[in-house]
Image (cartoon, rainbow, N blue to C red; front, side, top):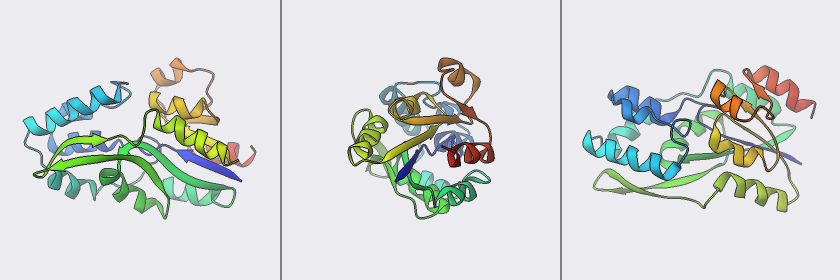
Length: 196
């Protein structure tokens, strides 16, 4: 059986932290792994910025509930669901990602957890190191044929472990790995995947 391991942000939905930054008018929150590939450094900056701007977890959660997936994302996943089982593998957090993933359908989400104290994000628990790579290795150990898609540097670890592609990746990410096939539409990607 084939399984699609897909990133969430920038692939099926907007970058959640960029959306948060835009909503609250805080440019520092717009940074992603495209800008700062080191996840721990990026999260440290995000948490500092939230505290400096007095942005509580409740305010974030209320806003995140309004984020919609990209147009066509749900239809794309539905259109390949008879050929692929689907799981979202993300460096987001359950608390932020689940409201978005639920709008895509009944799809499992594998990601990290936030640590909340006194209504503020004070830390996070990583599921494991190199989480995307480890998910692929786990599925392969169970004899799944994995196909991966993502849009950024942190997705390369899972694409390298399997057959995979970029979708909606910016030019600098594509230039860093010209050997990875890249798509700019769900329709073109669907055609490719269904002929795999």
